[in-house]
Length: 449
Image (tube, rainbow, N blue to C red; front, top):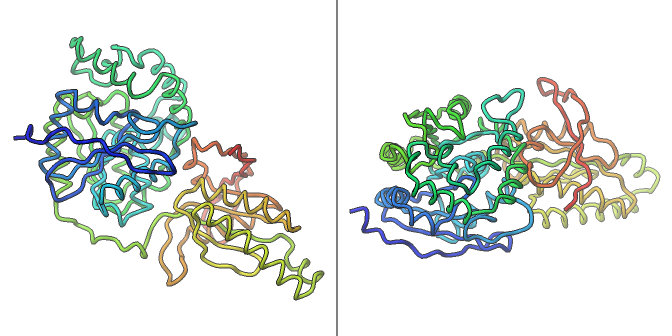
């Protein structure tokens, strides 16, 4: 019965000028978008019997959308590695090309962090979220001991990438099956090169979405095998403890590859959860979502206004707002408010927000102004034509600590832009007026982009 689903045609969606390869198959009425892990190749998937069987089983219950993220498989190669927000763009643009307005998101392994961020940022696009063998942080940290250090990750990758020895890590149940071990090695080689996977690991090093997990408000299932070697079960347990009201299912087995080992139980759990009646109402895009807020402020504006006089000051304000709005258009920002000597905007990606702030700081220098900026990523709520929420207050308070020409960000922003090429230096731990606790702040340095 499952073999009736034929191998689908590969199609391409455009995302930021790149071609993203995707396939659509299955007869279900619910869309299921599969977010891949560290590597993928949507055509080679069909050449491996267990993987093809699993996909066909899912296709009996869902309309499945699979894709290769930029730089992987059949999608365009490009200079550098994709950031979390660029990976979110890939998902959004593939969904649009496939005619999917809302879907169950099945985010696997390295794709889990992006899946959680996508769900919090675009809750209206996600019916349900399934995090499979996923982790919220890519590498070890003093307060997150559940991952290897980046040095260990690089060492292990160099020793086995594209070699039959990789079976010991990713599919221990197939140890001794030489044909499968060689096929797995070939899959890795055809998906990406050793140098490319090394660059991806290094870029992923500081990715950390722990701060945004409480903002995942869609029904969520955490699936993890107890003996998973590349991503230990402690990662799944952490996700289950920090995603609100998540369902957690821990299964026996030690294979990281979903289609190996007891794949039937994984498929059964995915189908049961993904096709269940929604336990939460479909969210309204105008209600609550994750955003990066940007506050800018002209330094010394009062003194400057007195010195210039009303007419000249109004002209300078208009020129400032024109520069700000031009940069918002270029970086996909949304203007929320202008208060004479400042600007408040939101973004759906933190790296774009940081780059926009830096561009504004540079741009207004040409008209004789010094600007300071503050950014934070958190949950915002609709307030008519404006937005509100604690994230708004935090962003404004961070801006107040910035000096002339400085762009200050919270730890959350810094952790979410890993791999973007943006660099930061610590500016110390500061109290934020009206906000509990002390906050580590970071100054954005010159942007190589």
